[in-house]
Image (cartoon, rainbow, N blue to C red; front, side):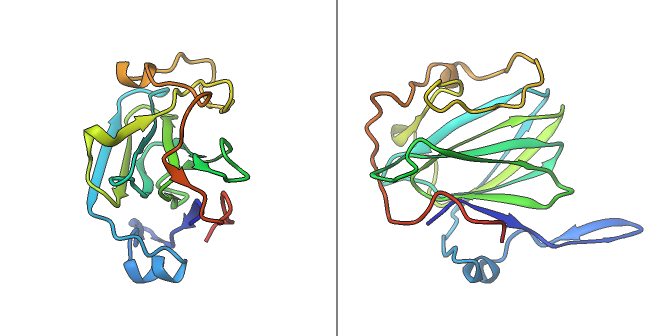
Length: 187
């Protein structure tokens, strides 16, 4: 399964807007048959909060469907599938409530984001419950990844745990390349 950028339909009128953000049938039509088992929410109080890059190892490996419900984020997924021709490469997009974009990160990808505004809220669905013994990650500023975090001169704010994550060098991936590309065009 590839990383997918999903464009939801936004119906606007004088009151504001409405959008259907999840439909199992609709996602299946886009080739996503993931069963989600848990919803998570986060609030970043300031711009420049980085959360990630996170993943969970099998048997609790997670696919994620991520959306921004307030503010703006730059959301990124990094290919960690052993044998992938795009191993260590990434896909990043800005997600906002107004643009209606969601990022689907399948199993085998590290995921993270940075808040671009104060009081930014993100919600995401995951395909496996949180399993602390299976969690892993990569450090946000790994030079091997060279992620262009849009910090606009701000110092990032990260958890102590995220600051201590290792880099890609020497990482032994528990994920296997399944033949699908890194990303596809917006659906």
